Amino acid sequence: MTIILDGKKLRDKIFKDLKAKLDKMNKKPTLAVIIAGDNPASKIYVNNKKKTAENLGINSFVTEYPSNVTEEELLSKIKELNSDKNITAILVQLPLPSHINKSKILNSISPEKDVDGLTTYNSGKLFSGEKPFVYPCTPKGILLLLDEYGIELEGKHAVVIGRSSLVGKPVAQMLLNRNATVTICHSKTKNLADITKTADILISAVGKNIVGEKYIKNNCVVIDVGIFRDEFGKLRGDVDFDGVSKHASYISPVPGGVGPMTIASLMINTLELFDNANKDC
Ligand code: NAP
Image 1 (cartoon, protein in one colour):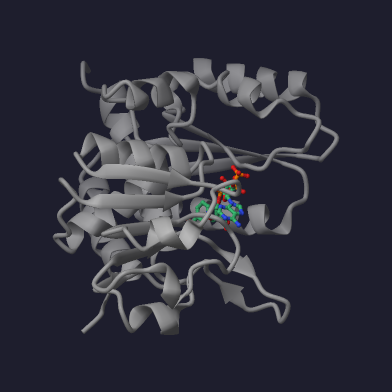
Image 2 (image 1 turned 180 degrees about the horizontal axis):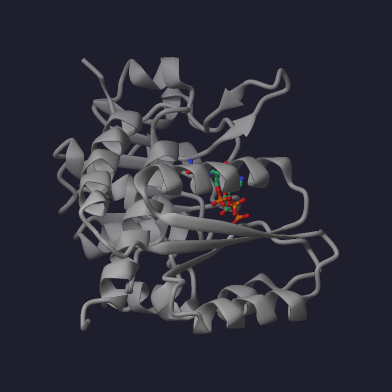
């Protein structure tokens, strides 16, 4: 029998615990979000983040910029947020308009306020096996989901499809840090199915319907990170859920799998940064 990795259920459990903790706190964390441009999906994500934070009792505000914003304007805003003691977490919603140097903007965030864990400081810590201030949200959510279902990582062959700095590379490194044997695949990988068929744990973070039942071995654990709309406007993941779930031991659905875990991790990270900022008080 295939077990569904239920991200919504775990998210709700995490939110309940966070809310109980936040209800007891006099001083609350503040999450500052910056969004630039008019990407409709980004606007929905940012609104969700703000609403979720507020429902839990986290202060949150959003600063919006038009798509012709300059790097200087963004850098100046981040500088202001970095030096504001009341702001404990900063998030820059991606993607940024194409004329903006993403890495320059992300790296201007103080590492101890970098709630997405995407600055070179925090990713450098992760890749050198040290503890960053926080781990990137989607990879962290994936590991929380695997742990919740008691899925052993040590010694397992994990195959990650996708090598972005947001998902593929950090999740591969986090699995490696947990003693999995990790293979990373990408658009130039040859004979993808031959590699994915050797996976005990398969994580697909591509954004295309790519993983069919011929791509997995029996009893494999399948995590579907991808999310996109097909030609009929239907929300889809990378994995052919019906075909693959006939063979997988565990599978995460889209929606309802990794998506809710990403936002849960963002809220956990916001609290962790706040606790860190106040640990000596
Ligand atoms: P990305 O930066 O576009 O990276 C996609 C990766 O897929 C790249 O490494 C690319 O390889 C690889 N790829 C593309 N076509 C491929 C193919 N035919 N075979 C093998 N690999 C292929 O995307 P991302 O930011 O990592 O996000 C990936 C997906 O996850 C997207 O659908 C995104 O919306 C979704 N996502 C979901 C959440 C969530 O919370 N649920 C969070 C973040 C992202 P190259 O490097 O060679 O180009």
